[in-house]
Length: 243
Image (cartoon, one colour):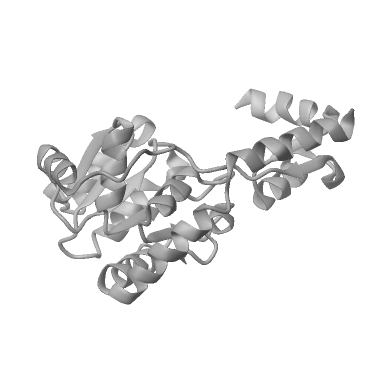
């Protein structure tokens, strides 16, 4: 906290160039770090994990049985930081009857709070914590999820959104921070601080087959516009500009 408050603004103001992955991050650098916009360059990231071939149905079925997950299910991938808003997601899922929620990642800072909230909301067996998973298992969960939920309230970019889109999972995401820049028109955006609104978005995607097909296609098309080669080229261009 002290580093972010004291050291980071000083270093940022002395830097000749700052690379950020989104317009939202650029705005934050100007607002909170006091950096002049003309010294900032936007270099979007590429997709997250470079997954291999699409898992077979046998592999998917075996994984779901091993993790005790029933379809259709909502998937979310995040480490348990408060800004990931997993408690808000639980409140929204409680308003969507009968559909399980699978949370991939370490509960970390909010684990105890989430456990209490699950009891309070009577979600019981509807929530599965998997912890971190090997890439092959994560790929299989993405490929078999009905909806990918990303309720984060603060992101510099949002790599899990790109992972999900690249595999063709319909997206429901927050309308906060840099998330809309990553999602574009390839997902349904909603106010994740309002459980009823986020729940309505989840239910809409879960029940509208035509919307699901549209979002799957748009997601895969959009994911291909983000590329690590372009990110490398943008980074190199910033160095060359200075040199």
